Image (cartoon, rainbow, N blue to C red):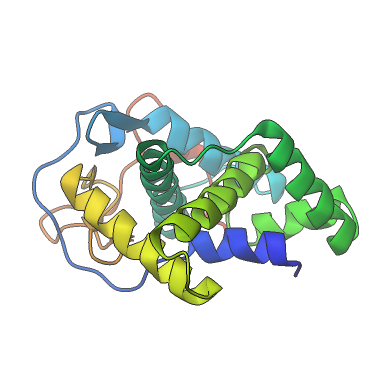
Length: 210
């Protein structure tokens, strides 16, 4: 895997293990972070796109896939908010260049898409994840200017953890619980059934990703 794609996937997986948190987003939200909102429709669209790209048919929703995509969406919003607060600007030209370099190193657009699809990232979200990677690079350079890459990523992780707590990041209990110190969607609360499809959305017609 090339450095650009690897950095993106590293940013996606800034997480381990789980406990719960309190309160819940509004009925139409999959997650909230301060004034930022991740709608059920956004989550459903990405789940649907991943399953479609894998050629799966209709069936029950895959809770693990839903939680993984929601976790990525929350982390992406946290990093985006952090970048905005620190004045880190990523241009479309930078994103396009990073994608072109990754495609060249991996052997083409199809190969790049497969790398991300293997990590539950649909094709439409790939540019956003390259933006995330570039934002992480920019934040790391500000937060730990003298440090190596790993230490910079750790600094961004800690910053995102603190920002998530400040914004009171939460996910709908139908999908799990937000673990603020780990930047992860943890298990569904024990007093709830399995994660449910959003009302009015098409998750109930999707099959597990395998």
